[in-house]
Amino acid sequence: MVDLPQNEPANPSRRRLLQATGLAVGALTLPSLFQSAAAQAAPSNIILRAIPKSGEKIPAIGLGTFLTFDIKPGQPRDHLREILKRFYEGGGRVIDTSPLYGMSEVSVGDFATSLGITRDLFITNKTWATGQWLGDDSQALSQLQQSMERLWRDKIDVMQCHSLVNVPVIVKIFKEWKKEGRIRYFGVTHHELPYFGPLTQWVEKGELDFVQVHYSIHTRLAEERILPAALDKGVAVLVNMPFEKARLFKIVENQPLPGFAKEIGCKNWAQFFLKWVISHPAITAAIPATTNPDHQSENIGALRGPLPDQAMRTRMVKHMETIPGFDKLAEMPPYPGKTFVGVVKR
Image (cartoon, rainbow, N blue to C red):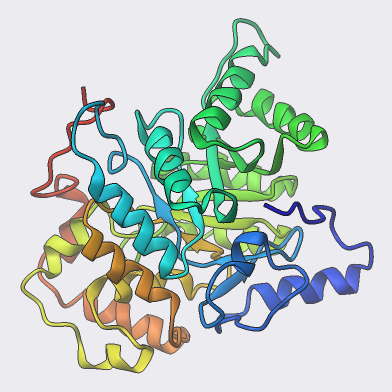
């Protein structure tokens, strides 16, 4: 992987231009000096988004690994290799994982290495560490070293403070790691709505490169403060749970895709939900997860074709509000009909 300049452009007007270009709703397909190694290795006709702090571009659809890539040793996992293969061939490069996701890092590292794509990937990882005393960085450092070994990487693209755990200390550690060249960017994450207040406060400080947040066509709370703050402060946004842990698919399983979805190139519900998410000007990439290679092919298809404008986004929400059960989604159990038997569940 080629390490690109990470400092903000010295010329403020140039910085604003880069941010405006990166946050445009339309697809970005032209070559750029600021494209990441991951983007340079991707097909030319996909939707790219710029990381505001650098202008570096990455594909707007990534791959999450919570539960899905966590397979206990000795159990079949060839389907994960096929998922990663289809993800990469479809233009995907951003993969989100964590040492808390059981064997997920191992699965990503093994299959990326066997496919020969390790250096082309843009890895976003996490740290969950409290230390034995305030300012103790030993746990965080051991996690980073373990992650590098599992992922076969000598540098992680993005390190995130997992669920804001020990966040004041961890962000300071991240800053040092970035100076030392261990990581390229840093950020914070959360997926639970009661923590959106503290998450917003960290975005509003303006010192983060990334924030990861729960956002979907159903759960739109991030639009109130987090996403506007990210736009204002130049913070890249990764979206977790764009499918609401598969509950959106349960709601629409007997529903036809609306005819107007063809106007934005949607061939299935996955693309409908993902294009709605990545069309928000603050969003850098969505990171849906799956255990099904065919579903992966559907997901990565959202990287191509037009994106909805604001009028279309509103139309899409209004359509979902006519579908029975959409207003009760939060009451549904997660991952309906699915079973996970990895290390995390054990």
